[in-house]
Length: 377
Ligand SMILES: [Fe+2]
Image (cartoon, rainbow, N blue to C red; front, side, top):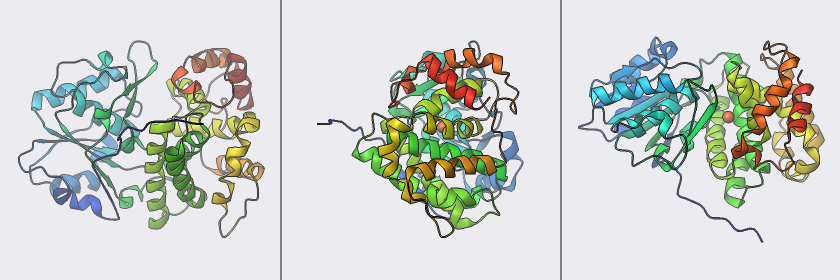
């Protein structure tokens, strides 16, 4: 019989709805707080950040030097900015990179601890700074996980910082903020969310609670993913946002698997996270289908819509492969300028990620990783 234990790992307050970001002043209890908004340089120039900032009465400061895939050195700079300004409420507004950075800034902004001293699980002390996260993409689910993933500036490796302290106090899910996303970003981040839900569903660590989150996430993503790269639709965007949030909750419990493990070496070489996952997902599902077929049999029907009926897990694999083929994203290593000669090195790096490999239902040895990379050569 399976046994499991659950930690309370849910943000204190989650608010969902179109236009909720404009109510940030009412949502955050911050009368005497000094606020730091963390975002990226692209968003900073948009009306979104201007309007959010004006909605807050305490005249917040804005820090926006966040790269698409932040390094420990860049995160350290953001932490230092927070220390110097003596802020006590951090509001992260952006995609996964921004939210992952904001989480570390809030966790370390009142201490002298260096970012590289807290790599791993359980190294963080109590967080003394309030943390609100407002995702502007429907993908990473960072707003609902205790994880922050950054590249170490020296080794180039993706490092995970994991701790309860990284669970935010407030999450605001406002689909209006995702309406302007270009189709490419919507597709890539949507595929990342799909990976979180599907990988956590067949992870060997799945339990009835994580499965409930995965299932509900798959229900929302399955019905909407096919429309995400089309003309923006508020209902589709809203469903993707909540599905992505569920993906974060599911992976917090069950973890991701071979897709994410094989994706990180591509991320290290500059491939956006969602794109790398999208390239790998259909192939990993195909490669491990004998191990995951029974699990997929429980969810394939969630992908049926008014336009298409999915009758079995085989058809689900075909559908996901079709989405990846039709989305405006790269599909092969050649397209992202990674030569086939690098495949053995990619495989070596992928299997070092024991944190994720151990969740995979089938073995992930170097030869398995190589075989999968060859499928996207
Ligand atoms: Fe991911």
